[in-house]
Image 1 (cartoon, rainbow, N blue to C red):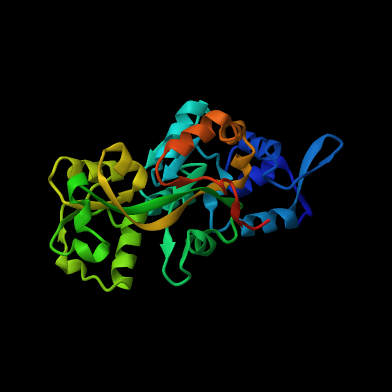
Image 2: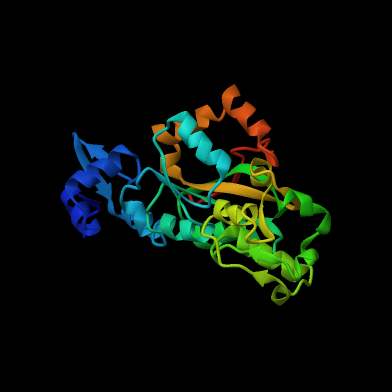
Length: 290
């Protein structure tokens, strides 16, 4: 067995085209050395590289310039205003994690509460991406609570007052629904005492049901309550993070977004959104395997 692989041999090993091998070299993703102008790949280093990516086969192919996962109004606005070139597919936190693991995006937005550690996102990321080259960065802290008609807000002091009311839930993979169920259990509120409306696929859809009078309440962001002139009963502050492929972090699209978030335009917009705190924006909460 030779100590080094050629470009062709590495392409055959990875079952990709030789052109893709050159792309991996150019991006610094694959270990290599040059001898008399020829690319050579140390077999041991390649074996170690493959082992470190075993839980994430998507690392061997280019990720599309898409952010998946949970929707965030401030993030969506920043992506448009910055003109950074990133697209979105927002459905839910858990859906985004699966898509990210399958290589369907460069980043995933999430706000997943872990009951055991009483913390946000880290437990899920560390268990799923412990050996992957990823970075978990904070985007914002957001105030979440009960959204009701403005003239009914005095009827609600907390989650226990949802009994007998019609509540719009989200799909099971949504971070807000996971959090709501955890809080109901913690506060010993029987979910069977709540009248559950049909699931809403997005938080905005859930809010519209309350605005139109088809439901009494939903569990949403303070920003949406303010935007739709609804009453708001604060329950908890959550942390919305973005898990980013480490190589993509340094690409022009992502760096363009970061630069925009440092501008007065972004800061001023964030300040007018009810319930947002961006003091720790881009603080790193997890850095995957080196």
